[in-house]
Image 1 (cartoon, rainbow, N blue to C red):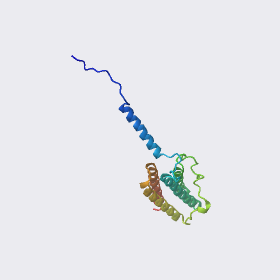
Image 2 (cartoon, rainbow, N blue to C red):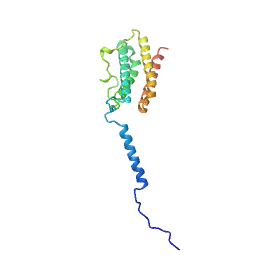
Image 3 (cartoon, rainbow, N blue to C red):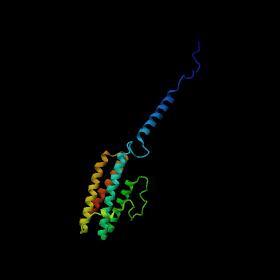
Length: 181
């Protein structure tokens, strides 16, 4: 009987696995190269949409923090009620302002240097403490609504952060109005 065993032959070219691995590596490198930008800006030096969104959110939170500070300055009797909410807003400023800095970088009761509102931009505060709190609740609600709309077009990571902060703002608005009942 003839032997059907043949000597193993060596491949004349690269193996299929080698080709697939190499192709996946090249495709991955191309995707990473095309999607990342070490400077954080587009090719024409404009900030990316995510950076603009983050900067806008940081500015909005800084403005809201200024409102809290103005109400607390005008109505120190509201300190126990507003201080925890103000602390959360300060954390929102930090979260949006710089994703590399920890949220606990500043002491809990003091505003950060970047979050401290300027004296010229201090918002007006109602003389009646209840009205001042209602205005603060309205500002929280308005900002929460704006953030909820913005998260629809935001990149995934930014959308999660916006959703979380919008939910916190809605809860703040509720807590602020609940005290009036």
